[in-house]
Amino acid sequence: MTGRGFEETRALLLRDVIDATDDDAPRLVMADWLSEQDDPRGELIIHQCRLASGTLTLSDRLETKHRIKRLLEQNQSSWTENLGRNVSARFKRGFVEELELDAE
Image (cartoon, rainbow, N blue to C red; front, side):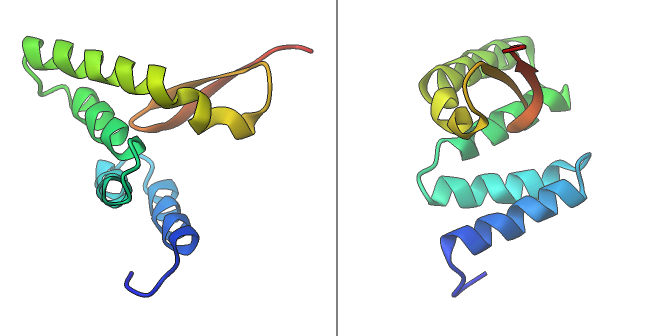
């Protein structure tokens, strides 16, 4: 992906995630790239994928859940600001999985 701009690279990586929704590999590639850009969303993707894998020990699950909670508390509003007002988003494996909309 050398020589590509930020938005083009992001779009290509996102397309890979969309094309393989059940596969964590494209998500983790995007997570690495986001982390290289100092975007905390990369860390969210990594932690949520690890949690979804079901392979963590109890203490690792608790620690991972705590870190995910902190990342969402610190960043969720900026990650979802383009969704509009009165919209609540639920992230799964680092991406919005569900939206809750206010009837207004």
